[in-house]
Image 1 (tube, rainbow, N blue to C red):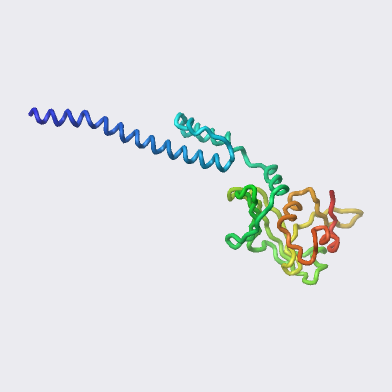
Image 2: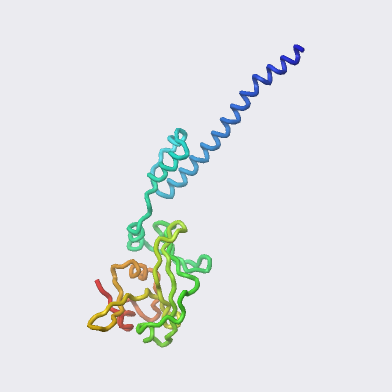
Length: 212
């Protein structure tokens, strides 16, 4: 009987200690994981995050903290990279992809397949091969599409330029590019011009007006 009480006392004494140790280990693991996640996100956003504060945060507070140190990625940010960065061209997943050197999470992707074949406008018909197709070009950030642009493969695929805008002038349709628009700035990076030296050179030959 005495031995039974001794064994019971040992179990009663050791069980809470064991449970406390288990809970402490789990909490320590979760804390370490959250620290690692915060640290990774901080590296991505180039923001300073006080890692030592994580242990005093709930999960909801951690998410709120992340949102404050990782501001929303905007079109202004994209435009800054397009205008002020070098780009590296690669083939990724059968897509022509241009990767921003300043931030490799920012990419420009050209569609693998055209979504409009036999695309015809007057400016596509003045080249030796009149075959043209329309493609989607996507500006990507962290795998998410930020913007989509229409580009056209001209002269049987030798030339790749943005689709034109249209407006009426004196009753006639004018095909034009606006050099201040995102599509024209992207075209400076990704266009294939074949025998032409610039977008302006191609526009003159194809009777495309460039404004601004």
